[in-house]
Length: 133
Image 1 (cartoon, rainbow, N blue to C red):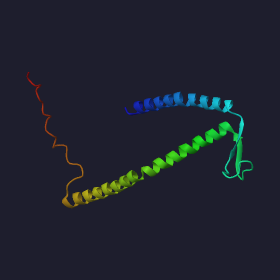
Image 2 (cartoon, rainbow, N blue to C red):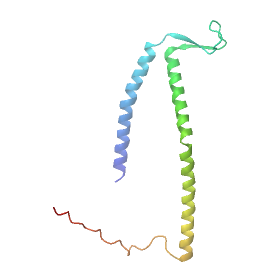
Image 3 (cartoon, rainbow, N blue to C red):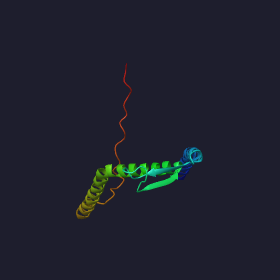
Image 4 (tube, rainbow, N blue to C red):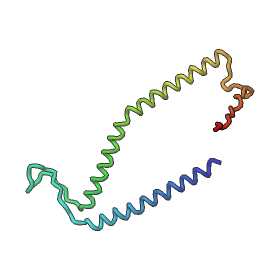
């Protein structure tokens, strides 16, 4: 019963990923082919003619490396920003586990079963009539 929606969702996710990733890969490959010229990146702000540190690489490689670096920096910033919520979730999980332990010890001391019998069914749902105009 639950296997059909999962497989449908998984298939849908794969189709959406393919619809996004295939055009993105085509664009990246086209960008790399169009920007093959070699550029020199100087890492020395004081000497433009003879830099102490420089890189010579194709333009597309530089852009892709900077894009990946930006994604990593953004991910780290988001991870740091959410640390308060992760800390709160861990604290609440510990609190819930402690309360479950207290509840079980109270049930054992009073002799109340963990799952009450099904004989105490809730009352029937209240049926309301539609309003009269």
